[in-house]
Length: 275
Image (cartoon, rainbow, N blue to C red):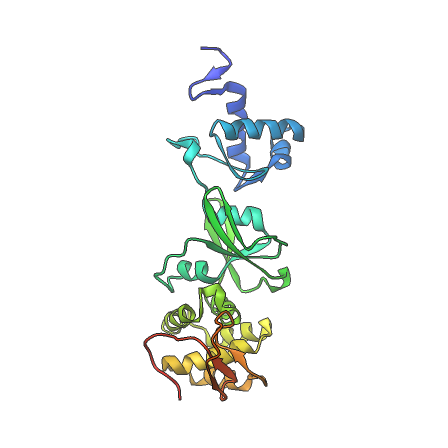
């Protein structure tokens, strides 16, 4: 065996570079970041990353962006990074929200294939697949990225909407929860959980600035028969004129509930029913 090689099919100098990347890189990285970490020119770093990816020692997330495969991975070429870590590197500034945050906070037992990412980046497509991982993107300005907490995935800090912000996001746009029926189920879990914070829920709703949040919330509280008198009162005080759809993504017209200024155009499943 050549003295420039080591077991594992990688040259000694390249393995040294790879080990340096493992020590210095957290999450995904590109050629410029690798060049700085390794003391190389960007062109040389780009060639090195391509070589290491072809040999299975790095995993290519998207064009020009890589993550380091664990050195002890048995099948390095098939190793896949944590999707939350990939989202943080590729779509930042961003946070994990909607149905993915519901899974994180144990508000739902539904399994969603795609990770829902709220990003301030301009994106061409809302449904993206990278490295075999599926992401659903919704775009909001960075000023709207409030009400998040840190979730550590290995050594990477990823922002995720806190329980109350998760609820408000889905009331603002029920698509983020997979539709209003799922949103109603999640709200039931939230209202009976230790995460419930009525004042914070109202504060976030005010900050989002969409009065439809309070129309949907008030109607769903009544539909659920939840014990939330003060929250209901806050919702009534914040009603706006005009009609909004309970679920904007549903085409059917539905009946009108004038008390809440809502067109109830979607079935919610078994449960109570406000008059």
